[in-house]
Image (cartoon, rainbow, N blue to C red; front, side, top):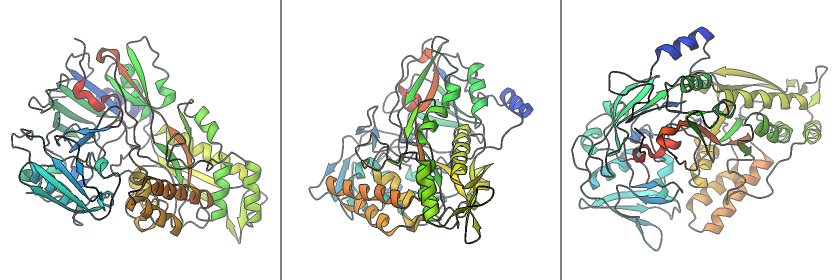
Length: 534
């Protein structure tokens, strides 16, 4: 989550004069050949909110697919169905679910002209599984016992247990052994100057400003018609909207209140992508107030989720009661929480949290107060944080909202609450394990709340290790019901992602999206297939 495995650092709020300067001076185009302002027939410039820490898949980049630089063994189509990519076909799976055999596509080359082969697949997975590699997502491959090549054309994965969603894990991008294998995996040049088999080649990464790409003319899937592609990193929502409106951008991800300003008919189209992306408040176990079960349960019913969807998201989203959206087959029916302020007050009264003269509750000399951090420049998080604090105040809990970058927030996460985000549409294990597993507390942005619940830990392991769909559903139902009893997070909303793109690219599509969006998701998830109008 954001804690995301690929997290975006958001800059400090800019004063008006600095905002105008940034909009004027930080053009997305440049001498590397990517043209700004666009209108240029074979180029596209899109505005995104976040930037990766690294461009190496060995460190987590592109692990959920859609990297423009790399390919995985498999990929996800517009309907989120697995399709072959570097593999020539979907894997052959043994009857016991412990062996996955992939036949590789032949004739594929990396962008430096060297051939792709089985050794690159083996190198990639073995390197990620190596404890010396700084990949926070390593636990996602916990089921892998071994990976081996059979000649140049076949790769065989042997699992420790029948991990049902394993094939979905193999959208992970493949790195070239002949380049990345000759460097320090954590600090080598490959982390910022990657070489892959994908439809685009990175030409320049100006950190904090843009990622520039050119089409790979030898791409195995066919040379893209969009020859120059630039992702302009614009962390402030208002500036991103301004630059789209001025014509500097061809498209951008925008929050609902800004996206609605681009009406159809002005040469733009708005795309809404259904997502698993949630906004949640971490309630750190180590905070005397936020870690108190009564405070957590009270906040869970004091918050008015529907009002947040209506007022903050302009209806572009749904109330969230946990990491699983209510329309998912994995959602545990009956775990919805109704906004009920009297119930919240009763929970606190019964637990000994009594209102003081100022209306704020105390217990054993401890005041019901704690800070809540959100990312500067992210208006959706800011609005969620302010609404949450307002709802909490009505129940007698004093929450002070604070803005900061991840560099400021991360050291405080053990004690302070954070307005965070997360969500993955692939499988419940993909998000819930890293979000809630007690053993991952303190591991970067995993389990940001330091949540510790034995029943949840056991259910997460059962869901991960069982190959039976009914048993897995029961396990994840247990997780969701335990979060009602002791919610280490207050889940607020699931957010639909909104994008505005110029009409000249025709009618585009979106996928069901994870928390991370803009970088690998959005209407440009398949930009290599676009046919721009001249």
